[in-house]
Amino acid sequence: MRTRRAPGTNVSVEKDMEKKARPSRPPHCPNGVGTTIRSITPRCGRSGFTLLEAMVVNVLMVFLAMLVSTAWSAFGRPTADVVARCRVTHEANLAVASLAHDLGGSLANHDGRIGDKSRLQFVGRMQPANSQLWLCFDGGPNPNGLADWGTPDTVISYEVQSNKLVRWDQNAGTAVTIARDVDRLESTDRGHEVELKLTFKYRQITRTYTLMALDP
Image (tube, rainbow, N blue to C red; front, top):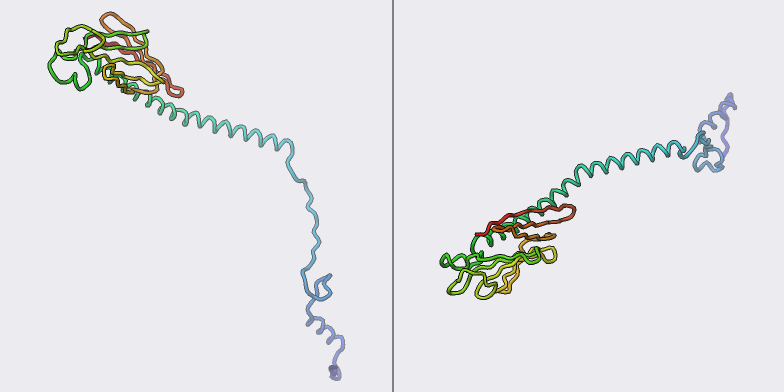
């Protein structure tokens, strides 16, 4: 359809108005649809790290590792040592308590705690190979006051088996584990007394306890 121009109308003004009314088309899009293509100018500069920067990073990493190692030595190791020391002390207390009962003058079993004073009294000890402790307690209906090291007497022995301090009742044939983490037992006769050395070892902790027991 053609539009008629009114007389006196400026042709150039009408053309300018038509151009303004039309939507502008982006470059390189003949249909007026699509995205505008921009030219990307590459950045000036360099990529990656220099040798000096890599060396600085390595030095910082080594310094950080040293700090972590120092912190572990200051806090981690003492805590682990405290746990090991507590365990060794606990096992030593159990061993000393059992030995003190048997070296107290009478049998620490139930039979030794009842009856008259002459029943199951301590009458002798031996230290076979200086690595065991044997204790003899007088028994029978008529105790003779001598160490018979057999029936009717009761013989109690202590020795280390598989890092355990074992108390063995030879008459009853029963064995009881008294303490663990025991490295060795040393028993030495000192005349009227016996010297006992118990060495405990757990992880990096090694402790030796010395007991001196007088004969009753």
